[in-house]
Amino acid sequence: MTAIATHTISEQEYLAFERASEIRNEYYNGRIYAMTGASLAHNLIVSNSVASLHGQLRRKPCRICSSDLRVHIPQTGLYTYPDLVIVCGEPQFLDDSLDTLLNPTVIVEVLSPSTERYDRGMKFQHYRSIASLQVYLLIAQDRAHIERYTRQEGDLWLLQDAIGLPASVDMAAIEAVLSLADVYEKVDINNSDLPIVLEPPSTMNK
Image: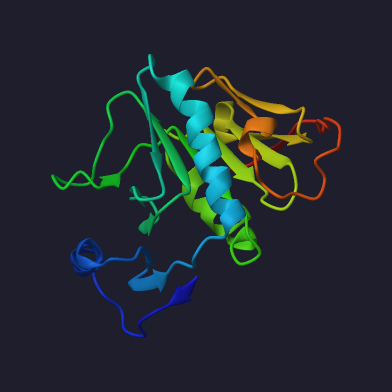
């Protein structure tokens, strides 16, 4: 993230600024951070994922939202815009503006060179503090590879990799399956001929 102001501001000032802004900015620890633009591959992956999951969720109590929906994490103070958010049950919002979600069930981030370290590290630490969050997906945009983190008992997270276009990602929390062939449709990737590889499950602490 890149700060766009050197002075700190309050959450209320950020929300007033953001709601009047034509571009999206994150907020953390008193500072506003500009979000970088997305590549064609990034946008295709997001739109393909929405298209694949929308039909599966139509008759379920879940809603799928793209990156225009802001998410707030009260435990850490972060305001951010995930690439894709799924919320099941009644959505909870910060205020009556209904533009800042508090209880996502699934969060999806598409990795890029400028955000990968953040998405894997500090941002995932923030996300893990959301009690409602059950699944966190990291999607590569230069190869057919999705990492699925699933919350386990004791606030452990189970990691499983899906690699190659024949693979798919099962999300039991929302009773949906995300096919890599669907996710990477019309996306120029380097390893479309790789077979399915499922790594041995591993866990990580909250």
